[in-house]
Image (cartoon, rainbow, N blue to C red):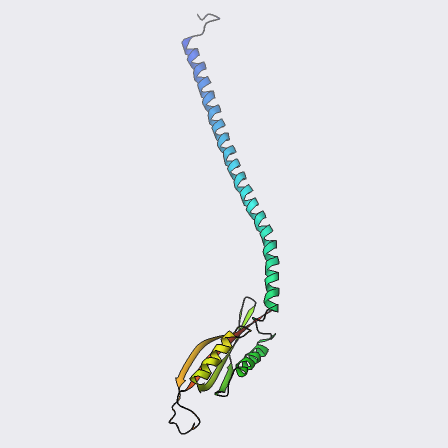
Length: 190
């Protein structure tokens, strides 16, 4: 018989086993909870750093918007762009610049208006010019067009010598050239 104060070894093993199983279950639950808490803390840190980054971007956006407005105003008031408000007016302005830089030793043979291209809010306007003259006068013409304000540049330059022996052009002197080029300028669209 089992005495009231004494327990059998089998009962002790059962109590110890239940105690160990309870501790293991509590430990597993605690470890799971600790993992979830650390994951939540990691997510909170990431969200906080993302929020700080977005807040910084929002502040920078206002500053950048102000700087962009200032730059746009400076660009419009500078003489770097053509003064025209349409591509047709800008083409006419390019022709005027070209004619202004012609000398007595050069002649404008032909001008063609090329299609305009809009990139962002800047319209690229171009004309194709065909000019004849002596080498030095044509070089001066090209230089003056590229160095003037508004900023213009030259692309697709083709140079050809003219035969001085041709009978259809008795005025041509030795060293006369025939050049074709695209003269390009820009206007700022609204």
